[in-house]
Each structure stands twice: as C-alpha cells, then as structure tokens.
Length: 321
Image 1 (cartoon, one colour):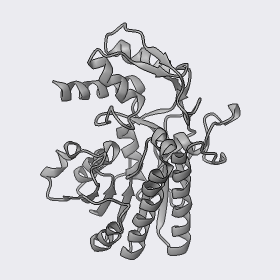
Image 2 (cartoon, helix red, strand yellow; image 1 turned 60 degrees about the vertical axis):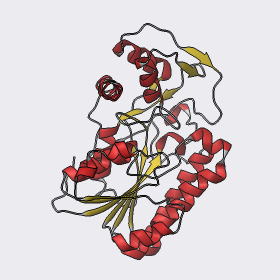
Image 3 (cartoon, rainbow, N blue to C red; image 1 turned 90 degrees about the vertical axis):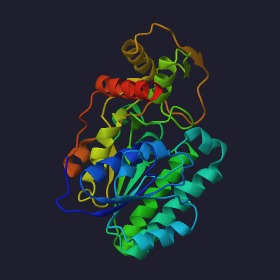
C-alpha cells in the first residue's frame, strides 16, 4: 500500500457512507485534512463517529445534485477529490432511472466542475465493475478493463457515463482522473437495508435468526472484495493510474449459495435459505481481472473471504450488543 509523504487536503464525496467513511478514517490516520460532502440520505453520522473527534475533518451536509456543491468545492480548493457519492441500488435505477441519473451523472458533473474551477489536481472516482461490463461471455471471466462496456441497468449506464465525463475533463481541462471499477464490496458499516450487498443482508439476518431469501437459483456468482482492501486502492490511486479505468476485486468468483454456506458456518447456524424469482437487472456472473491494478497501482487484495466475513460479523455483533 502506498502512503503519501506529505500532508494533503482532500474532499471525499459520500464520505458518511460505508466505503467513504472507511476511506476518511484512513486519510485522517495518515495525517491528511479531509472535507466530507454528504447529504446523509444514505450515509450515516455514526460512520463518522471516529472521524468527528479529529480537528482535521469537516462535514458538509450538501446534495451533489445541487449547484451549491460546485461553490463549496471552489471554496475548499482540495488537491484531491475522492468521488464516492452515488445512487448505488441497481433495482432503484431500474424503477427510477431519472433519479439515478440526477445523482450519478448530474452530481458527477457538479463535482467535476468544482474540481475544474478550484484547480484540483486529481479526481479518483468509484465506478462499478459489477455492472459496467454487463453479462460477460465465458471467455471474458475474469473480465479485463479492455472488455466492451455493456451495462444492462440504468445504474450501469450512469456509471459508464461518469467514466466518459472523467475522460473528457482530463482531456479538456487537465484534471488527472482515475476510475476504480469496484467489485462487490463488503465489510463493517455496510447498511443491511436499502442498496445493501448480500453479505450485509445475510449477516444481519443470521445474527437475528431471521429467514434468508436467495433471489434466483443462487448459482449466480460475484467477486467479493473487503472494504479495507478497496480503501488501499483509493489511497494508491492518488499518484498512480492517471487516465485509467482500473478493476478492484479479487479475480475469483463465489456463488451466492457458496456465500450463504460459508456465512452460515461462521454464524453457527444450519437454517436453510428460501428461494425467490431472480430480480430484473441482476447479472448471472461477475468477476474482475485485476492485473491492471497490480501493474499500475501496485495493489492486490490482502483479505481472504473467510477472514473478511469474520470481521464483518464481529462488527455487526458489536453494533447489536
């Protein structure tokens, strides 16, 4: 993991969210100054509990859909912007694509305009490796960044558009841009409701002895990456990977059925899940080739799935105790 030699001023959009707050903690631990931009619609103040004790963190409750965020970024003049604020629920994007675009496209444009006008050196943005490439062919697993973009949901389309705007702003205005195409991120602080991933949902239900429903056959696969490893990639992308889309995952597939079996074993339960019809917009397979991350970010995942799930379950147990 790369650490910066000098103190920097950073903005983290979506910094009260699951991934964003974990990144904020890391930046503060490394001695940097952080301004968090979050409207708290899905982010949680409790995620910033540790950060709020630092005099190097300021929270700005601002909606990136509003032009106010442009003026705020101009005033803050950050050297680096980590752009993680997003509408990240595939199902909601299918039901309300206009809302999805208002955050993921218009909101991104506001952030980029703020970066342009404030002289920001670099923008590191969270893209979606799980939806960007659509349904890959059997010879495209693990999927490299050179694969065609074939998003099958409005959420995937909006994230593809975000990448296009990053490229345009780099070419037109000289802002260094990096897009990290994230696999299925899991770990402590992930909200088990709303747009939550399957690990958070299963963890919450297993700990409360509640029934678990698997949508589809359960044979659909995903690439699960632990949140601390994702934060490592964001940190390394501050001075590396200029102009690239870079996959951040493990390069390994796990089926939802395998996920449930592993988590049930860790949680010491023998309860069987129930099955329901597959949801629209969901992929059958998703797994990312991570060679570019190794080559350009000097990054590789460090946390195995069993260890990551144990850390996640322990964290949820602590919240519920």
